[in-house]
Length: 125
Image 1 (cartoon, rainbow, N blue to C red):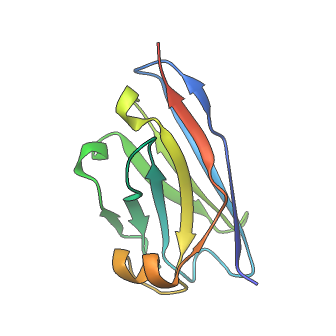
Image 2 (image 1 turned 120 degrees about the vertical axis):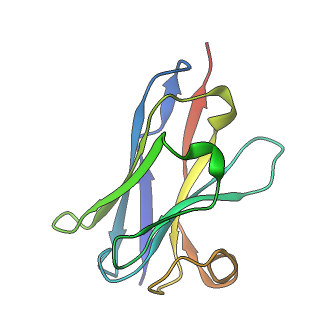
């Protein structure tokens, strides 16, 4: 079955960087689109960005443009989220997800997606 496992979260100070990993099983990450999303304390879950099967990037949140980059290593079947210049408002549990589709569609993902358990990112001084 399709499974995703996030790792790499932690506590960092504002301005620092983190790279999160999403290890996939049950499917090849180069076959499906994969999305990173997050949920901050007391806030709604929001999409962050997504990589399509064709390697195009879709941003769901404008605030991360220029700071967050999504990539994948097909040999390791892993998707990464590189986060730079982190801000306190980036504090959230970060999830990777897929709806076994080829494109990046938030509504489809929320209705039919498979999600990992998440990894906590805390940005605080």
